[in-house]
Amino acid sequence: MKLRITTNLIVLIAIIHGWWFIALPLVIIGCWFFPYYIEIMIGGFIYDALFGTTSGTGLMAYSGIIISIVIFAGIIVIKQNIRK
Image (cartoon, rainbow, N blue to C red; front, top):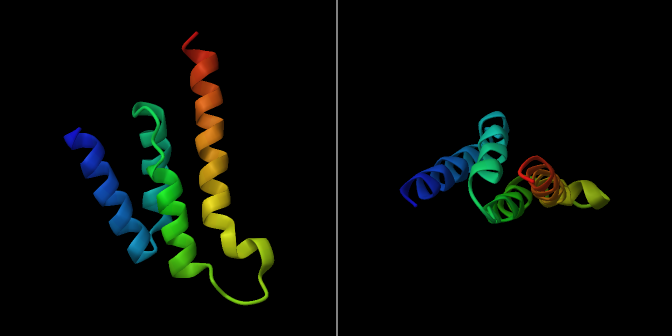
């Protein structure tokens, strides 16, 4: 439990500072090791709120949440196939 909270705090700090190269590997590792790591979607929403809200960008304004859902779904499928 402490490891999950620590990971969440590090990811939150990385997202706030715009360090996607730190946040992205951590959320992928978090999806792999923690069950139902939906914090990735919250992180994607925060990323979009901070950096993705410019007018006229269409779906690109929601790239953080879209990428987080794709990563979450992909890791779930891979985990189910590997852990059978």
